[in-house]
Image (cartoon, rainbow, N blue to C red):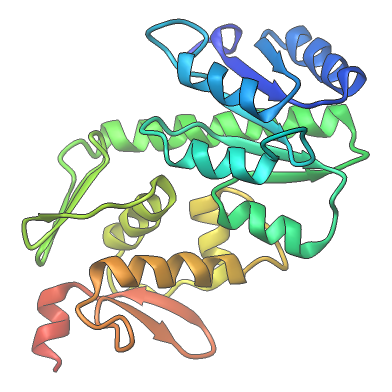
Length: 247
């Protein structure tokens, strides 16, 4: 896909920052729209840059008039189309960063920031999206493992023929595990491979997603048999058939 056709929405109430970001992204060949508040941003996201397409990325400030950035992030992640999100915010506290990531943001940049760094992160985000899309096309046959079925093109997951209601990040995490059963991954490994960035210090966001995923796929989330904790190391995925035979 040509980068000249990438559409990016910037939701930022500071007009000077928004214009600086817009100009620099436009210089890189991106098509940029701007919204000064959360309500307008959500309306643009729902409408898309054209009636048939969605935005390729969202650059989102947290401190917005009306609907704040965290609520925008939450609503975007409830939409059927997955839109990559980079949060830009003056809120540098770790709790805000962790909350943003746990709500589904793909990256978090603290103000004041280098525009060149932001552009580099946008490019890295698109490289990851392209790589995931390529992997999905290569693995169009999906994964069939025990009672688990994953279709990476339709992004549909089923367990024992029951459809699982997974978020985009939960699907990516489960798909990553299922492609490499019984292999142990540290939290940092999962951040690097599934989130696509080395969010050092935010490994506990992995715990949150693991717990949510367990609540959706485990018969007894308090005693998981599919996604198992390897104490002192990380996690591994054990197919249902193997889990049953070892019990």
